Image 1: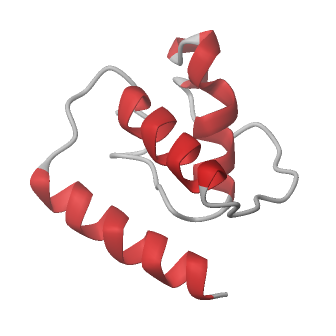
Image 2 (image 1 turned 90 degrees about the vertical axis):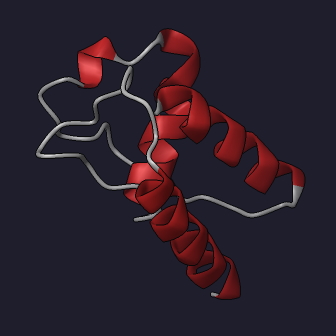
Length: 81
């Protein structure tokens, strides 16, 4: 999941999609996020594009097809704003 978030974050930055300043997400496993992914995870969660998974970020979990479908919808909604 964290790698997916990094890819999405970088793709959106390439498209000049802006993100505001966001606080560190308040998930119990945020410290398990790899250092290279913390900005991406913070920005996407802060923007509401990604939510936790059962109260956690679950950075090392695989991303499911259902999560990708929701992610695409949220990206489209976010970029319309």
